[in-house]
Amino acid sequence: MNAVLNTDASIWKLLDLNDGRMEKISKPRQLRDHCPPILFIHGVEFHGPEEAMKDLVAPMLQHLGIENLKNRSIYLLTWNSLIVPREISSSFFAANRSKQIIQGLTELMKCRRYMNDVEKRAKEAAQYLQPFILEWNSYGSAGPIVITHSMGSLVWAEALRLVLESSSMLIRPGIWWSLQPALQRGSLTEAGEYRMVSKLYTGHESARAMIWYSRMDFILSSLYLLSKRTLALGQFGCPQKSLPQRDVTSIVGEAHGMSHITRIRGDFFRRAGQLIAAEAANLGII
Image (cartoon, rainbow, N blue to C red; front, top):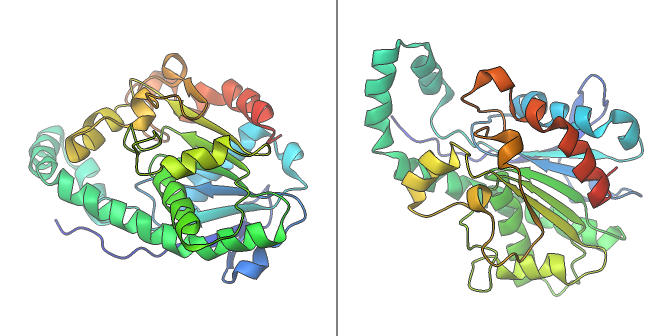
């Protein structure tokens, strides 16, 4: 099985909250909004804006309430986050259980290489996002409201790190809501790779942040742990409590976004629906 190599990062603006129509944003100056916009950044196993809109953005907007968002522009950063090519994963799920076990065990031995490759593409997506962040900060009074899931949190953290290292501009971070981030557990601590990003969200009056983590998250406790050989921020939270965080284990259980084992309780959004609206109100999103 060959790893996917191209990033294909792009930003899309949602034109209609009801039917999901989008247009591609090609230049940073197209992002000039009077009200801080919402930016979604998805995690792994998406390829193209339609998939991310259907499985992440649309259900999230449903729980936030479309009526609450009429005055906000909504954007989606999409990037090629497939761990393996889609045709390979499709054939895996179409196979019988015995073949799935054999193929799964075979590919599990390669998971570290696959994870390194998808992280590389996440950081390339962060490079693509960097000039758009600079545009938001040069034009708007506050940064965007950013909702990230899984490895989408790595994209945003890396993009902010690049901006902080390359620009003397005063960064206005806005709001960051990170859902079960696929980041190393200590990445936001004083000794972590993204310590300055953490300081950014604790050193400004207008900045707010929230991390959701679940100790039962089966993706972070299996694929991520085996690949990175370290604990994930989205499974156990930050040990130094550098940013506000919430243990949602009892609510979402083993669900990791759109992935879940126990189908009776439904997916992530069905489990966390009521809390999503309450958290959004607490953060000032709605």
